[in-house]
Length: 91
Image 1: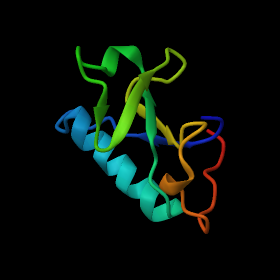
Image 2: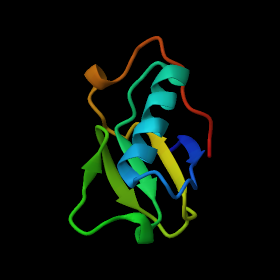
Image 3: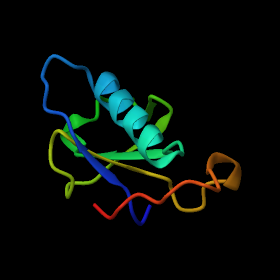
Image 4: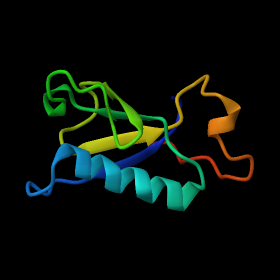
């Protein structure tokens, strides 16, 4: 993923799955396409969890805790992308 949307959710009452699902829904509404990947801080990823809310979860220490970087993974099949959608702005 070269570009994406950065989302912040620090509400301690929401689970990781709820936070990612809200971010995915917003991304889809705003850009007209479904994200395929979400990058989070390594401390936020529970053991054994690889995906949630329809996106693959990756980790990077450069993403702050409670932040979610969503986008379409490089090389994603064209069928997953909308031809009329706008690209996400750089994070």
